[in-house]
Length: 324
Image (cartoon, rainbow, N blue to C red; front, side, top):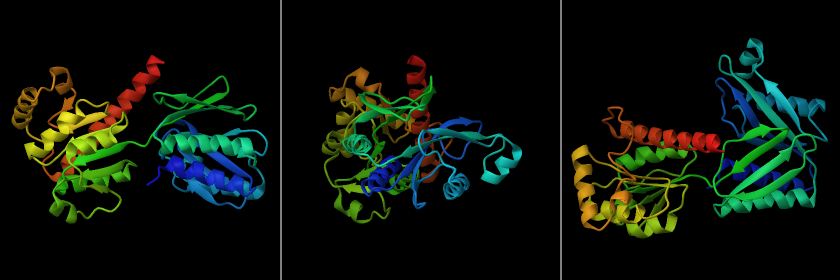
């Protein structure tokens, strides 16, 4: 499955390769509540074919109307602002007090632009991070490789937008909780891989969109480990969970979590010590997994886990922005 960024960029390449003129539209600023986050994108061609989303419908319709009237930028980027009045909020379906700025970039067919779009797509396919800088006055692009992604920003008339790998979630154990986590995570645009060496558990799996792996847990962790991947063990079977955790805690992962009560989690930490996992590595383990919101049912626990991942991702993004 491809991320929405890969879909949008890939569609732009197709338009340009056919000699069609297009427009790349990006949410570059939000004020108050907004229907789509910073960096959300869509691309459209001169025939009004659209890929991606900025608001869920209304702003897209307004851009298409501008296209029909010949009012979209044709030579240089332009910034459009929506939600400046109560009437606009109601018209475009924006939350009360919400405003958005949309950067509209005209895309004229050219070999150079196709090459740069392909570079971005290739980087995402290979799970590498890339930075796009756009001179808003001229429309010129620059690309560079980066290690970590930061929040989109505009300074001195230059857009800085980072494209990073899609976040992955490797769940160890194909059970009811994994099903609930998968459903939420897929809706949040995570790539989800469910690993279980027990064939009968995999045969009972019924969530479309999640990938299945019958590998041994430590092998699966090694295969998918990178800084944009989270690993969570869910089986309650130490023979499976501990095998995954021993490997996960030595890898450069975004998050490592384990299901279990406070008492179970403490016993797990003691076992990991006996298995020569260092205190420093064990300290990276989130166990019990998820935010402490009093969750009881499988779906409530899944919600607590995904909320914790969201919190950590947001905190990391803010820290990088402040540090920069």
